[in-house]
Image (cartoon, rainbow, N blue to C red):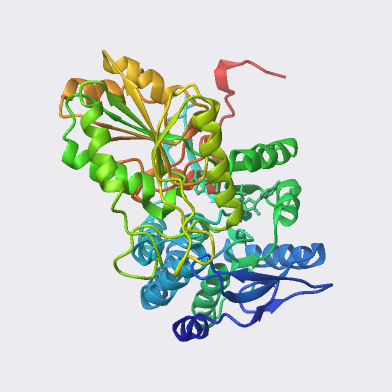
Length: 513
Ligand code: NAD
């Protein structure tokens, strides 16, 4: 507990924290509803937060609008320099922030550090990007004319984030948005608001040192109600929302109704295919990390393992051995690999899915227990489950945000495995393990995986920030992070310039008078 107090002091977390921050100013305007945040690690109350009111929201929007007028005029490489400084601050605070991520969300400390490293990486990426916000130049069909396109800042970018990556997903959005000249309003998950408050304190140092205006980076603490205000608000031209497909359908409809842009990063139901040519030593490392890492609470968690019947029994036996020895416990301990689920509701969903899949005909091979006794008093620690199942089961078709790995057997050609892999509504991440080039290329072809992420000889989780991240179908279609994902944060303008002394019309149209 002493260590936690120290982390909180370092990161500016108070006993009760205000409902919003516009950078330098922290506030709250009205009737305050307070929510206490308990750690899933040991059940201790970490701190409380005030939930924002609609008046708070209005104040944040007004401040962001003001800031945008100034920020969009700052040259992009100078904005990049601010992001560079934010990256340096994050390097300085990597350990306490990583610990707070671990303590508030429950992922192991190594993954907490990894999450902060991802924030640092995206800062580096965004700094380079700030000098590369390129458009094309085109040849005009008219003599003495020139055409080109440029990208301009869009305005306020709303960011709604999920509990499982409480800070990294924000930084993927916010750092790109910042170099693009946008300002951000971040609504973190109501389950993990403290790490967001910590980030805002870290940012504040950069804002103060550079004499920057209020409102470039804002955070507002609230639940779905504040999220819904953001979705319906045409003052937010781009809303990036990460979370469940259920949430995404509501947010997507509300943003669509006002013809805004929605960047949706929703649920996954990710599979790894093990063909008869898989290197099993490599594959099993990837499968176990993918299935039990973050206690099965990554959007890219491996949920289905599609295994060729010739190696099925060996895979099952080796997995059973590994699953019977998984170190489960306090995620801040060096030896633990599996921490708790976020809360008791998640534990209930885990239990319900296991009952349902067995009712459908699945076989629970190992796991599925809620741990009790010393160190497990919170009731949020579970043993990861392995279940033999069919892809068509309703339970298998859904994303249960918990460590359940479904073993699914296929026979014959790879096409059969690909049909199973694609035979769900979600389309986020996928992987194949095979040393046969023909198989891996088919998996990556247009008639292969239908997911936004398709990997060869690595697992489904743990993406690098350099690529565009996101998925198809019920995963929402959005792309963020690397590659050219930045384009969604800007508005594109096509410019045609006439430097001749004539006014010819396009398409050769004659219009003489
Ligand atoms: P969730 O959908 O319950 O909540 C996510 C966020 O949406 C929260 O901030 C919540 O307050 C907000 N929200 C909920 N309903 C809303 C509404 N009607 N209008 C506006 N905002 C609303 O999800 P969660 O339990 O926090 O996170 C787990 C889910 O997130 C999983 O499905 C996981 O796969 C997904 N996820 C996806 C990605 C990705 O990049 N594709 C990344 C992380 C998590």
